Amino acid sequence: MKNLLVAVITIACLSCSAPQQSTSNPAPVDTASGNYLGIKVGGLNISRDLGYNNGTSVGALFGHDFPGNDFAFELEMTGTVSPAEGTATALGDLDVFTLGAYGVYRTPGALYFKAKAGLVYEYFNVDLFGLPIEGDAIGLSLGIGGGYRINDGLAPELEYTAIEADIDLISLGLNFAL
Image 1 (tube, one colour):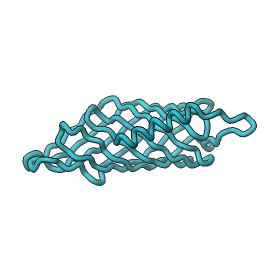
Image 2 (tube, one colour):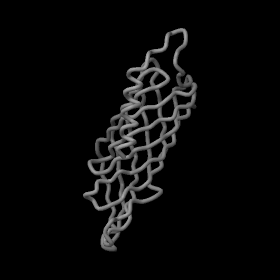
Image 3 (cartoon, one colour):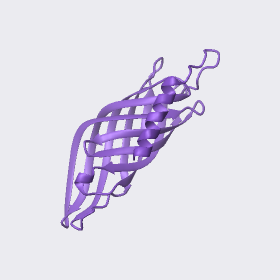
Image 4 (cartoon, helix red, strand yellow):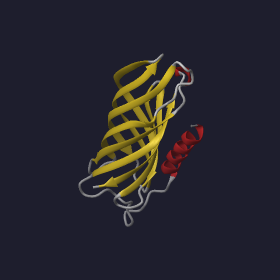
């Protein structure tokens, strides 16, 4: 996890210090609609205090860039494909599903920094001492990351998202302009 967090911070620093492109050669921008779709895969980083190893999540998102500025709105859904395994025999696998709505800021330029904040609905399912337990919550979620606009319609992103106090997601994604 530390290596991925260092990579996110490095991308953020590079995008802030990268020289801005001139107006005669502007950075690639999304298509006229401003809409984009994205996919991502990442590792769930679960607090060791909960007694679980980390799992793997996949996600999809729909976003809309607001014209004339660097802000966007994203709707994101993630779910576990490899549940977090309990370290004690009494703890079963932990599955986490999220639905989030985020306000997003991206810096201008081909190499960019991303920050997001929003509300997330989280549903979890776990077996505790052989009994299935389910729960859900709504809370604040924050994220940072960076990416590179390859062309007008394609941008890979590396992102860190705090889902809740004990669960984070470090993901690698790809956004496609519509």
